[in-house]
Length: 537
Image (cartoon, rainbow, N blue to C red; front, side):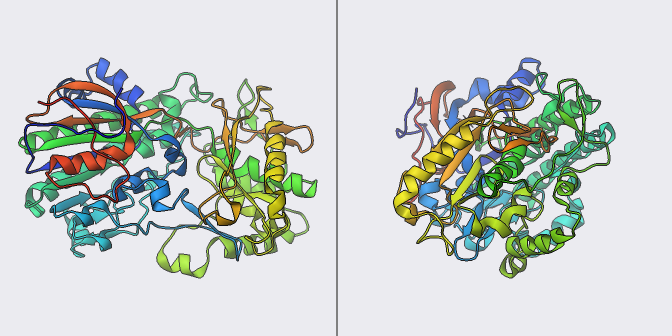
């Protein structure tokens, strides 16, 4: 096994290095397709290159993997532990764009970027474009030079899979077919764009950073197609979902092969920080946990029970024209019309004027934000979250309307943890909560993106909660079928002078320093990782 540190030893410093980020690529899917001979470029990287597994650790919980790549910083160094910030003075939760400087700004290496998420072009001299077709771009659409976006639009057209970046297709075989076709077309479009930018538009580069986001979009929307154990695998949409995922992997493999053929003198670093898998958090973190905390605070429900068609095993289903957000919104409607005032209050809270002006996304679609008007009166509440459940304690001296004494913080957190662990999955009867982590530091210093309690869910995803005090919540239909539940990521280093070999597990934060070392650029001390160790060529 390879630990942190050591050097990625080669016989040469490379004039050019191409980083290809495979955003959302799940290694088990890639390995199965390699075994079938469907991914020859990936197989070449595996057999001829230096290969590492990557450990992303607790940083994976943040959902900010590509901010970690773009900045080279881990969550502690970046002081950012989630994509959602909570303002303790106003009780507003917002999802903000990155404010971190890309790592390329700290080295004298001419750089071209093709659509990397969370890469703020305004803070670097890199050429390229961002938020073109990225999944969770983390920055507004922009380019350097500014006219590049219009050039790309004229030459390549609009991004081919825009409706499917956050696709919701599992209830519909027809929509799954369309997504499968168009998302593969988008990879092909991305390949042509990448070759043009690196070979023609900006030929004088030393570092090229290309990120393929279609893996991410495909896995989250269509995981049930490749996972025979998934509760929705037998739906009519599953064959098209499988075709879409495998099509993305095959098209991306051709993209890699084309770039390797176009730049034979370059070293290539092909990587993804962590794997993917079934989604076990959408319902639990976005809807069930907020309702559970509301019932603990007030002893009554806010969310009504829904009525759904179900599979034979009791998994709720949606019709072809139904949307998860819209159907869950119906569970909060009230006959007396009071919900109108509540809805307007949480819209104002979740989308403040400064966020609208900056073009940052609104969180108002997420069920967790329905509870925002009540947070001031709750001792503890669930924040909007895309992954693990995140609970904020309404703490005196920190929150403007704090209810819990700082001296009672540890006892109260332990009480919440015990309460959470009593939850079971009403479909399986098994525990719903896998783990509860309580903030270990001084709670008065907890940052805006921090949570006092983080809840992880069992892999058999809880679509509902059954609790001895709170009663039954849900079950609810799936939103995304895929999520960020995979294990290790991977990194392949390939090029003249790099000897083939497999070298165990390295840190996900060691990829960027390793790339800079290949270029002969000393990695800045500010970076969180160090160059990976490997066998000399």
